[in-house]
Length: 147
Image: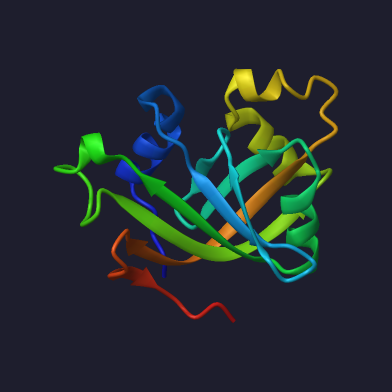
């Protein structure tokens, strides 16, 4: 079973303040990869990452067509505190929440500056069930069967 750590929660949560970005990779409906910076990416719990999708464009369309997603976090300034390559690669299956309790829970942990960009809350909560955690050079640190 995947267990996201307090260290992951801390470093991912402060990524924008540290001057680094979390990248989310989805597969667009035309089967090409789509890479986007997500300043709202957070650890939701020990098995899930989440972010607020406010644009509802290419990444969102990709998630609706294919729930497989990758997340990349790297911070060279913290190389002595992080796994090989100074970061993590997360792979998982995303779900879209445009209403309901889980959407509300995600909104509660989003940074205010990100939510201010969607004052009418027209966006969606994206929840990622993590099935693999690797370091930046590809060594698998945790993995479970995605089925």
